[in-house]
Length: 176
Ligand code: ATP
Ligand code: MG
Image (cartoon, rainbow, N blue to C red; front, side):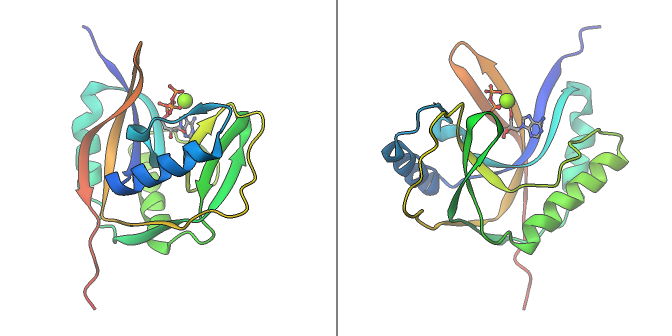
């Protein structure tokens, strides 16, 4: 039997306009590492690793079962991480974002997935392998309303990495 494995993660996509603005600003910074292509800018909620294509139906049901709230996502500071990672982070993670990531992790662990044990760190990667991370005087407030979350398939070929959205689910605005 030929079982195909897919590299998967749940994430928040970026509206086109914000991706453009972030990409433009990032180019002006002149990062010296491997920049993330504009089309791939995203915020990871939970990384799953490689799984059989046969598990997709289960993951689709799992996403369907989540009733998350929409929220304002504001990226307002530059952060760095291991392996020369440079990313945009947030001074204040929205409660609805933390709830969404937490709920996904809870349901995925319950379904038998092994996840990263590290505390959830909301960040949007701009580049990797940077040796001289820049220290801009200020970071513009990049803001958008997160109204859906996505299961992405991370693919890689000679043209580079591409995250393909497989399923998406709405985040709802609570009634007042
Ligand atoms: P490439 O590995 O081809 O350079 P990439 O790191 O963007 O590109 P993936 O490794 O498929 O592509 O990662 C997809 C997303 O999941 C990225 O946001 C990445 O930071 C995150 N990710 C990858 N591995 C892990 C991990 N072990 N734990 C948590 N998040 C991860
Ligand atoms: Mg990687």
